[in-house]
Length: 248
Image (tube, rainbow, N blue to C red; front, top):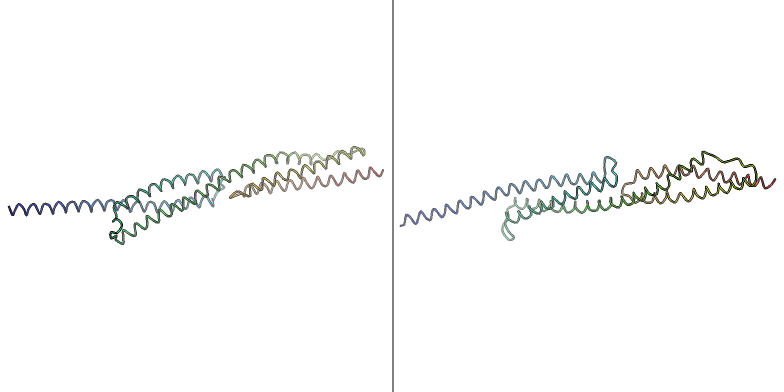
């Protein structure tokens, strides 16, 4: 009976030892996976930061639509990584000691890395949402700019053609007055159209990046100045001519 009792005691110890070994094996396996997943998060966060910087400071020309698309792609990936990070946070609660229990220094370092990953994810998420909102506004301002240019450019071409066609030579005071009136109307029209260009330029200036729109506005402004100077010259010339007719 004593021998049987001793064997039972040993068997119980072996069973507990096996259970403990199984627990340690499971813990080590889960810890290895946990560590691997934390490293994966850290690597992706570096990549995500580079993608955001690439959208903010692109090496190639990106339209506002392209920027919104790219920010939304990053946003979608952040959402996936945030969900993935949440699973690691759940796993951390299951495999590491609970509150009040002793935690090893290595475990503390690993937990701290996960907390850093979560903080960086949240920061990146806030930044990408802010950028997406800016670029969405850019689309609105770009549309306003393009609407203004579409209204201004056809007039600009007609005005330039009108300059090329020149003025008719008046043969009487009446014709001179008519041409003077027409020249003044042309000058007034020219000055009114400038407001359309200025409003378009104002919309473009509200965009995050507006280099291309700015170049268009400068080019149109130079053409407008050339036409406007000609209209002023014509008004001055015809005014002088009318005055000469009146002296006859």
